[in-house]
Length: 130
Image 1 (cartoon, rainbow, N blue to C red):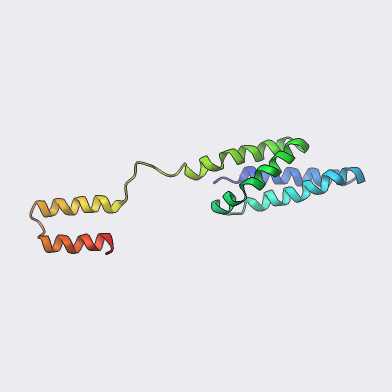
Image 2 (cartoon, rainbow, N blue to C red):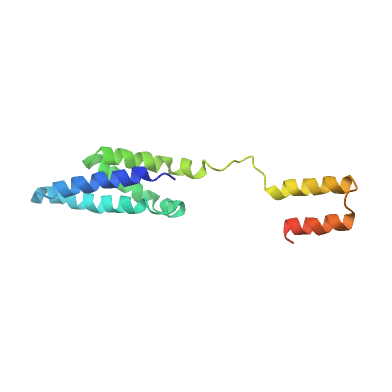
């Protein structure tokens, strides 16, 4: 998964959080921005399965960022809604395990008489790892 959006969202939140902390009133918004920005940047280093476990947290911080930094929130939300798509984009549903093709080829060899029944059974067990 491309986690650049998470990293950029976190950086924007960190920079604005630090800027807001210059005033006391701004610190009320700035401190949560710094915390959220740090978390989002940390999420960009996680594996895909760990990202799925923290999916709701990503959504929460993205919504918060949306109200405070706008662009950071938009980037976070784009990433959030692309999580499922990115995880399954590399999976080809029509692919069959390679052992099925091997078994078919082995059966063809047996039918053609190039291997006997005993050799067929032995190789079949090896392919199926029985």
